[in-house]
Image 1 (cartoon, rainbow, N blue to C red):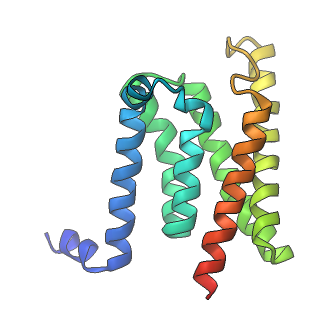
Image 2: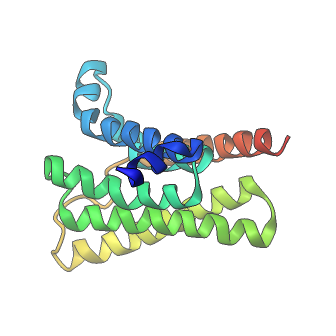
Length: 170
């Protein structure tokens, strides 16, 4: 009981917990939301959206929790995506976060850091996915989301992080 109370005492912890609940609920209800809106929301990388929002509005540690938990939560709740793809997605998101902070520490440029980290983590994802498809461990198309949409979402995510980071620094 004391541990639970201590968790909620910290404003930051409460913010992280509320964000995590929101992110899990969003992923859980994503099929219903897509159906209601008649828009295939999965094309806009909902797990990366949650990771980007976490990166912008919660802690580094919480962002790693989101990156690991969302793909696995999605698999355990809906058996989609397949476990191998869920693990690959988690690895890509973890790499994305790590690369962001690694590059940011080196070049001190938020926009360049998030842009490069997304591009490099996507390259990793598609390279591993290609080998999984070739080795018949996954049976799907290499690119399920059109490249032009990936370019657009990558730029939107990068500008969002730049905007939020600049506001934090003021």
